[in-house]
Amino acid sequence: MNEVTKPELARPHQMPSLADAIASLGGHVVGVHDACNSVPPISDLDFDELVESIKRHGLLRPIEVNQEKQLLDGRCRIMACSVAGIEITPGDVVTTDADPLAIAESNLARRHLTPDQRVMLATKILEKEKKAAEDRKREGAKKGRVSQQAPLVANSVTSGNTRKRLNAVYLQSIRLLKNSRCREQI
View 1 (cartoon, rainbow, N blue to C red):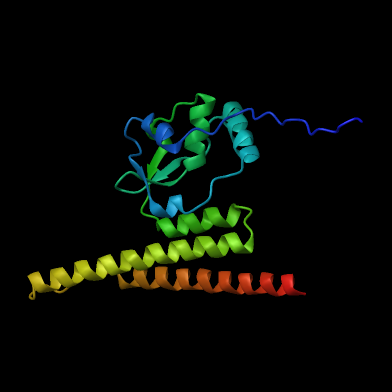
View 2 (spheres, rainbow, N blue to C red; view 1 turned 120 degrees about the horizontal axis):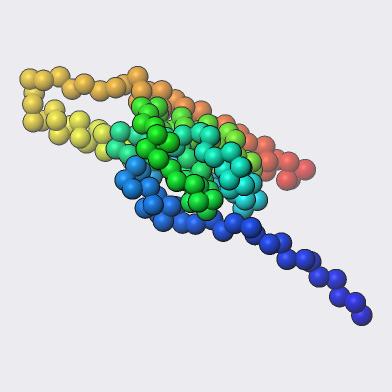
C-alpha cells in the first residue's frame, strides 16, 4: 500500500530570540515595553517574507523606543535585521512620546487574530493598565503625604483616554466573544 506523506516545509529563516537581537544593538534599545510584548509575534511565513524584504530593500521603517529606550515598535524588524545581517544604526532608532498602548493597538489591528485571541490580549492589557494605575495612585498618595503644600500634578486627560480606550477594546472583545459563542451554538 502506498502511503501518502506530507512534504516537510523548509523554514528558510529561524526567528532568533528577541533578547539576542536586542543585545546586538549596542545600547540603542535596552528593554521591551509591556505594551510591545502584548502584541503577538508575526507568523513564521510572515517573518520569512520580512527577512527577504529587508535583504532586498533594507530597513525602511525606524525602530521606535520611548525615553527610557524601551522598545515600543519594531520587535520583528529587529529580529529580521539580525537574521538578514543588516546592522541597525542609531539613525534607524527613533525616540517617541507616543502612547505605547496606541502603538500596540495599531499593531494589533494589522495582525490576523481571532476574536478569542483579541479578548485574551485585551484582558492582559487591561490587567497591566489596572496595575499601573494602582501603582500611580499609591505613588501619588505618597507624594501627597510628603508635601501637602505642593499640588499633585496628574495627567488625568491621558489617564482618562487610556482608560476609555482600554474599556472600549475590552467591551468590543467581550461582544466579539459572545458573538462567536452564539455562532458556535447555532
